[in-house]
Image (spheres, one colour):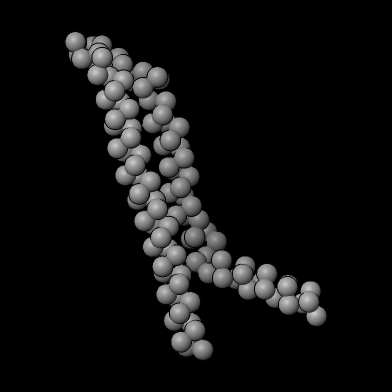
Length: 107
């Protein structure tokens, strides 16, 4: 029983690490792609500081950043806050519940 419990803790830790790695990968891709997009859009307006700032803060330039940033916030919520709200063992409890329902249905 103790061996099974430690195995479950290891599985939970691995799953948590995979979610965390996925978030950091998403954050890295978000940063790189948005820097490239901003550079490409602003690159044509490097002749004066005013035109550079105007293009940098235009909705056309920041639209990808804003939309993707909102999606990144949802991803961060699901990785960092949602497990605290539902509890870390929520998945295991639900799996156990579904397995019990299947066992009761088959009887």
